[in-house]
Length: 201
View (cartoon, rainbow, N blue to C red):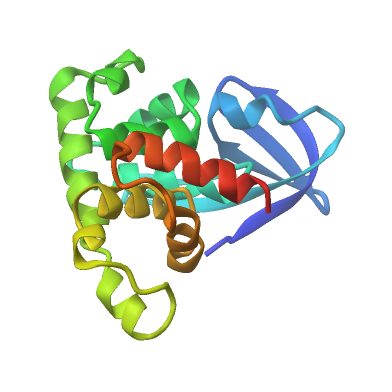
């Protein structure tokens, strides 16, 4: 598995960046957000995912881990391929995507080209369920995250914790950022407040 590519940006095309690493050009399919961070002739590092199928092998590259994590989450959804995942992540930041999933807002996902209502609803349904199954209790037991009231380990707290983890934060980082927030906040507001706290570090 190719973990990352680090070299000079040799070429930029729609949804594609070529990174020259020691004379070898790696063609990485990517999002418009990542392309906006690149400049031809300048050095860049992309975190990658290698997709191998019977008829093709494609390399996908992303400017940061949060976008890569969101990409992996999206292609794990039934009926969502790499092309659809890139379309969604080209239209919104990883933070916005996590908020959509946490808030159950499938409508916003349909703004991406090629993403219909049924697919958008399936993405929210499957990812919300998947991230909610994160073993928070085990992490608390092992001391990875602070002990919290049982009510806060489910519902809005669980959704917020999961959304932050989708963005690449550890359980400990996410839980510490959520600790002390007002219980009356919606999950979306909890995530926004937690991201503000995390950005300070």
